[in-house]
Length: 90
Image (cartoon, rainbow, N blue to C red; front, side, top):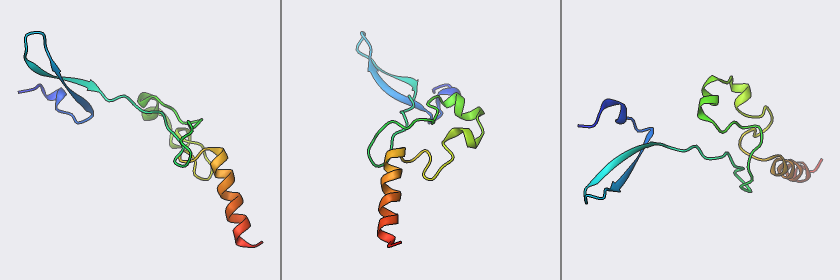
């Protein structure tokens, strides 16, 4: 039986073949991916990448405090706002 600390699903399971021919499971922390824009895929600025930072930061520091903050980059947000204003007919 694997030790209780390795039973967590926050650990990634990797099957490795040893030189002796056995297959063993190695447990590794899942690497955090860089936050990217949902529309164009650009790297989002102002979003911390380290999970340890995210735990200790308040919600206002985890992502930018603006419309679609942490979801879209500033360029895509600007385009979406322009499109919506132009289509509203004002």
